[in-house]
Length: 262
Image: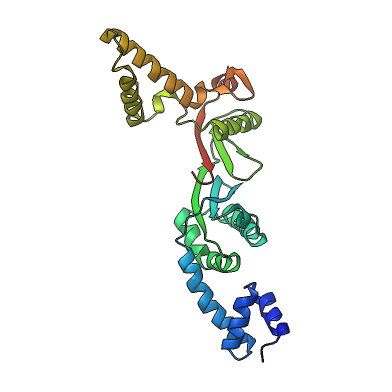
C-alpha cells in the first residue's frame, strides 16, 4: 500500500514532485528503492527532452584561478529557475571547479557536468545549460573584473600595467557600453563596410556632389569607430574624459564581456 508517508519520504530523498513519487511507488508496489530506479529512468528521459528547449535567462559566474580570470554563463528558461537553491548551489560548485582546475574550454565543462545538469533539470523542471566559458591569462599584466549586481552581466579587462582600480572602472565601462574593439583600427572591416553601405543608402536621394557625399560618409564612419572602440569612448563616470585618458602609460591588452542571453 502506498501511504502519504512513503510518498513524502520518496519526495524528500529525490526532490521529485509528489505526483511523480506516488506514481513511481504504485509502479514499484511501495518499494522505495525500486521507485527511485523508476524515477531515475523516467526523469532522465524527461530531462533529455527538455534539454532542447530555449534558455533566455540565467546567471553569470565570474572568478579566477591561479593563472586565469574567467566568465561562465549558465542559462535557464525562466528567472524563477535561476533563483532556485539547486541552481545557485550548482553555480557555486562550478565557480570552485573553474578556480581550482582552470578548465580548457566549454566542452570540458559540459562533459564534466552533463549528468549533474540532468539531475537539476529533473528537479526544477526546466532546461539548464552551460552556454559560455572564456578566460583571459593573468600573467604579464594587470587583470580586473566587474559583475553587475543582478549577476547577468560581467566583464574582464587586462592591461599591460597600471592600477587595478582603474582596470575595474574600465571593466565596468566594457560591461555598460559593449565596445567592438579596443582601438578604432581594430574594428572588423566587414562591419565598417556594412556601415558604409548604410551611410550610402541614406544619401542616395540627396542632391549633393559626390565629393561632399564622400566626406559625409567618412565622417559617419569615423564617428562609428570612435563610439565603438573602447579607448575612445567617454568614461561613464566622467563623460568629460575618455577611457584613454585614464590609462596614462598603460595599454589595454584585451577584454571579455558577457551578458545573459546575448
